Each structure stands twice: as structure tokens, then as C-alpha cells.
Image 1 (spheres, rainbow, N blue to C red):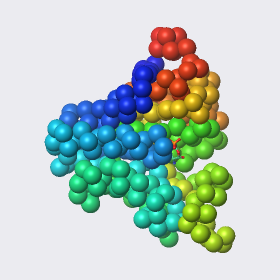
Image 2 (tube, protein in one colour):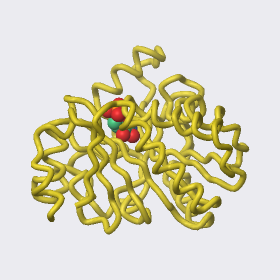
Image 3 (tube, rainbow, N blue to C red):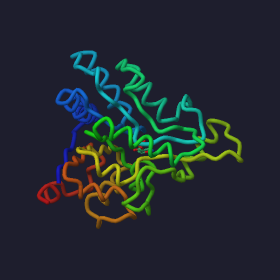
Image 4 (cartoon, rainbow, N blue to C red):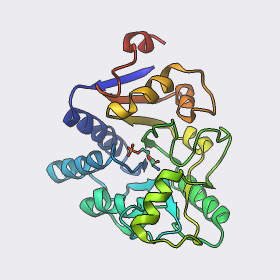
Length: 249
Ligand code: GLP
């Protein structure tokens, strides 16, 4: 298994950002998928800072989001579109057609998911997917129990996250909130994956992801079966694992 442990938070952010920048430099037409959340914000800002310093070619790059909140405007601060726009897309200054997202609202999410994955294929498929890790092992909005064979789909949202978004957006009870996400099958089709996890709150799930049997009960365990997946951790999230033993696997 390829496991990298960064000593400090700055090292972690820089290492993750370098994975993205290296990919863009190797393939200027790269299609790169990003995850939102507490783990990835500074990584995205670091990519923009690296670009400001070195001006690598981003004219043909595609960035996209792994998942999206549904039932809110995409301009809502907690929508993945808005987060990625603020953290990386606007600072890089890439063109509108270089940033593609699943919709927050749609009359037909099934069709929207197909359109989205077809568009990724049309652009050459996913070169690199940066994945965050849910505390229960979820990937994107694929919660425990999601069949590994699932393609992009409209999901039910984690109740804690749903309650928070409802509060923040004053969404009335009758209005449905949810998530839409690439499925585990789409994730596994990415040519390269980097799973990023940091913080003591991820310690238990990092251990399970790397040591528990591969199972739909912990979606992230499937990443061990991917031919090119790196697990990039900080020292806090890696504190419970036997790194040398796992690296030998
Ligand atoms: C949410 C997002 C995921 C993200 C995960 C981890 O569920 N939908 O894309 O990877 O949370 O978030 P955090 O880094 O804030 O722990």
C-alpha cells in the first residue's frame, strides 16, 4: 500500500497540492476531481498559491467536484460549487467550461448524473481524484451500505449535515435536501486516486479503512483494491496504524 504521512499540517497541504500540480504539469489536459470539506480547503488554496508562483499551464485543465448538495442554490456557502469556486477555481482564473459540477437542483437527477459522467468520459476520463474521508468511511455522499457497483446517483444526506444546512439556509421542512455524487464505480475508474485525511477525528476510520476487511459497510476500504491509490495522511490521523506493516502489503 502506498501510504504517505506528513509531519505537519503545512507539509500535508503542500504534499496534496503537489499531487494536483504534478498531474497538471504532466498532462495539461488533465481532468481532476476535487472534494470539499475541512481537509481540502487549504490544499486548494495552496494549488492556487503554487500557480501564482510558477504559472504552470492551466489553459486546458478540467476541474470537477466529486459530489454536491442538492435542494439549495449553488451560490450557498456550503454548496460544493461555491466552495470550489472560492477556494481554487476563481483564484486560478480558469474559464467557466473548465469547471464542471453536478447540479444542486434538477427535475431529473438521474439524467443529470448520466450527462455529467458522459462529459467526464468525453474529456478523457478522470486522471486524478482527490478524495476526502467521512468519519464513518463515506466517500463523496456514498454512505456505508452503498453497493460498490453504484454509478453517479442522488443520495440521502447524512442527518447531521442535513440539519446544519437546513439551519444555515432556512430551508423549510417540506423542501427536500440531499446529495448527488459520483458512485463508487465511478471513483474506482479514476486512473489515479489520492485519499487525504487529517486530524485526530479521522484516526479510527483511517485505521479501519486500511486494516478492516474490504466491505460496503466502510466504503473507503475499497480503495485498497485500486491499482494506483495513495493514502496521504497527517501524523494525527495516522497515529493508530502500523505504517511499516501496511506499506509491506
Ligand atoms: C463530506 C463531503 C465529502 C468530504 C467529506 C469529508 O461528506 N461530501 O466530499 O470528503 O465530507 O469532509 P471533511 O474533510 O470536512 O472531514
